[in-house]
Image 1 (spheres, helix red, strand yellow):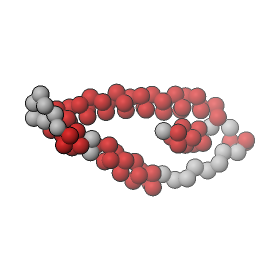
Image 2 (cartoon, rainbow, N blue to C red):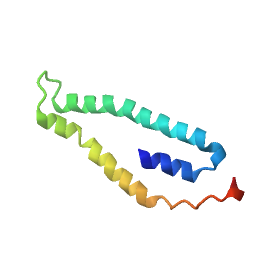
Image 3 (tube, rainbow, N blue to C red):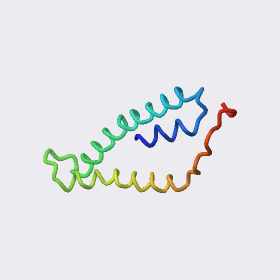
Amino acid sequence: MLLGFSFVSIRHPSWTNGTAIGFMNALIMGAGAVFQPLIGYLVDRAADHQAMVSVNDYQEALLVLPACLVIALIILFCIEAPKRLTASSH
């Protein structure tokens, strides 16, 4: 998360930093709002809608987190290193 804010602030001119960082913060909060019900749905589906949920059901549902990590690593290698912004480019 911290690297995301650094990346956004380096990637955009200084006069748009506030907007870019605000948008980044909204995406982070939105991801939490999406993943909590998604993981709950996956746990419920793994348990076949039973009252008792096993550890294996949680492990199966939480496999979405390492999958997102792998996707993030793939995306990381596809992003170009940002060029340093000079004072004249603002």
